[in-house]
Length: 199
Figure 1: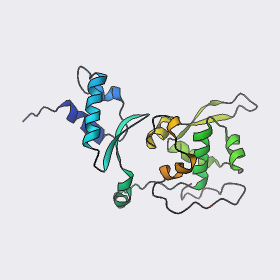
Figure 2: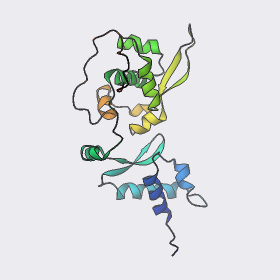
Figure 3: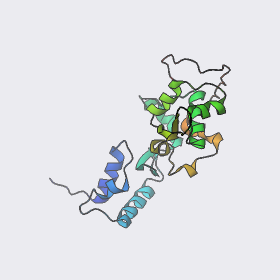
Figure 4: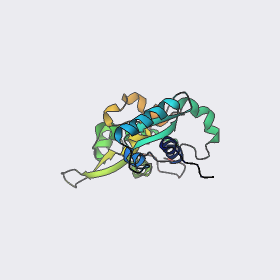
């Protein structure tokens, strides 16, 4: 039996089954001819309302639209998550915070603020996560790389732009919602070497 699927149901299915956020252009093109901005807006508003009281919410970020588990449901769902959210060290979080709030910055800028040498592993961890990227070189001696945050960083924190960044004290909670114990301050002048157990 051939069932026709409404465009609303199609958009809902697309958002539920794709791991990446979907742009409005992609969603509109699920119908031929493509939906108008107004039609798509109405459908997304209806979906947002329909899912409001559930553990999944429809959220919009710099990368587009996607369903995301609400923070209140994380503790109960954590045991099901085979691929656990990695825990990041204080060094990684401090470096991310400096880049997010001071960008664009060079490695020496970060070192000047943190007061310790920045390990290559720290920058590599943030790059692998898709949260930072090189956007150019500073016009100074040695032409050092300039680091900035990415659209993925904004999307993962459910932000549309950098002006929506929370107060600096809340950044750690957003990046690590399940981290209850306080981070231990580094007492050495350099980052510890990476032992393969996480950075």
